[in-house]
Image 1 (tube, rainbow over the protein chains, first blue to last red):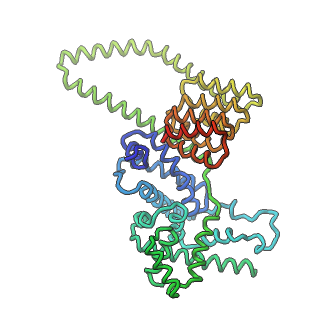
Image 2: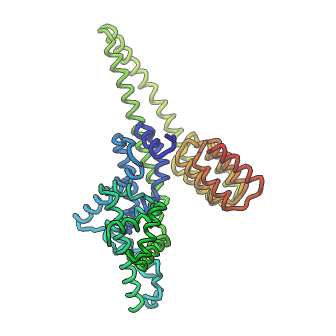
Length: 187
Length: 263
């Protein structure tokens, strides 16, 4: 095993070489942040969740067995963290807040909506309009480069079911984006 | 649509389709079993996802993580030390007879008295040296923000007097490395940071800095530092620099030899 592979580093962390977690952080914190941000669109929440994932890695390092891919294990932890956060927010009546900076229209924007909505903005809004599990499969596959087999492990599902989910998520995304496009162009 | 076709398209989108799968998909499209227009729009939507903005975390995320890691490392070191002391004491006591134990107790008590008498002085000295170090660090961080290159060079040199660096000093030096207009200051900063080369934050900061450096002198200095510190992950960054930039022949040679060592 390469001594700097993810697995080797995590096994060293498990043995007490905690500084090795720094390298894993450098490899994965951006990806985790992207995943959280694309799930909740809130900067602070995403940063908190990244931190809590690495806190968990440290806290439960003894439970790491080295089986399977490290990234699969990491994103399983991330997914649980996100779901816990989501449940907690809903329980206390404070659902995940969207990043207001991103949603606010620029002050000087007085032009009609269809003139300022670019295709990619429409696609971004369509992505956030998708059901959460559809959005999550797209994020993990398209942006984080996880294979369907790995996503299936994270979702505790089968590879075939994840492929079907991915296709349906993309189909729905395409339909929503087209309907938004029509809406903005004919408004 | 048939689930098998859906899986085929999902594989195609993620680039997980083999040659046989591609052929099958083409036949299904040609026979109209998969709607060609729908397939194309889904493919275009998938490609369009690549144009969306890439959210990036703040530098504060790293600072917070490394502070947490530092705290945990210290806790772990202390815990390990106490466990070792406890284990040795336990072994020692289990081997002692009663007279030996009494003798050891007497020695321990006498030692305790002497220790507490001497401790007052050593505590004072330790406190003073800690204060000196934080003063030096504060002075260094302030001077690094100064307008004259000579002052900033002095500040970098002060850092070499610090026995160990805290996060603030490291961050200040990394900031200088990436932003200082003077090549001399940046070269000295690499030298200063090398001293703390076993610190993960320093290693990663140096690697990240490779892409931001335009000066060949600084790139060569970084290549030497990376080889010395054996930061293998820097090889990828140097390769990128070689691919993306038109560098002087000698600089190219230097970077290539460093990559060979690092790989």
